[in-house]
Length: 231
Image 1: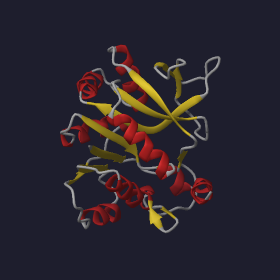
Image 2: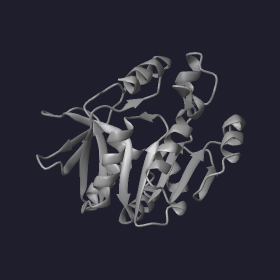
Image 3: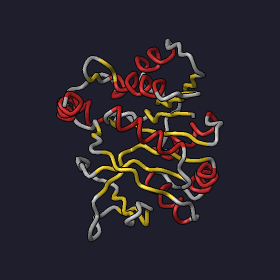
Image 4: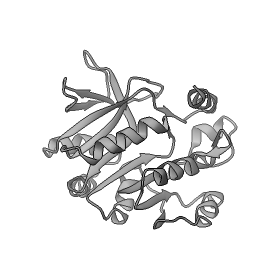
């Protein structure tokens, strides 16, 4: 299965809080976020790994261009207006029928991710979206499934009974790429716009709960993520 990472953001909040290195090179337990994800993907039998970064960070570009992996590795260097456009620029690298896309700052337990990937291998729905009840984002995307975890809606505000938010990890099948092209044509910008369009186009999406997924947006999130991984 193909794996891909969106790492084209500027990491401006971390920079404002004194973290000078690019967000993908922030280290947890002495391993950078980007290296950790690539290692996890390889452990889950990746057939290819693709990464998009922006054009500004030479240090990150040098780090990734020096990589030598046992599977095809695609590095896309392109500044984009948003996460959905980053996904669009990665999409030509995704050749298989199923793929997994993550944001670079999503931190999760490796055993939960392994079970998630295994579940997707036999999933009949068009997509299996990672969700969590842990909310640490200033603007979370609420994911509202039914009792069978079929997703009914994505909302910017919590609805009555809302429990889950998006974890920034998306397992999707090939029909989702057709919808991506439509969303770009309609001037969508963010992944939440794209996810809503998937439902609007009739694709069936299911939620897959993780115990906790942490986004590294602030300096304090680094220590919190390390404590989480140590438990």
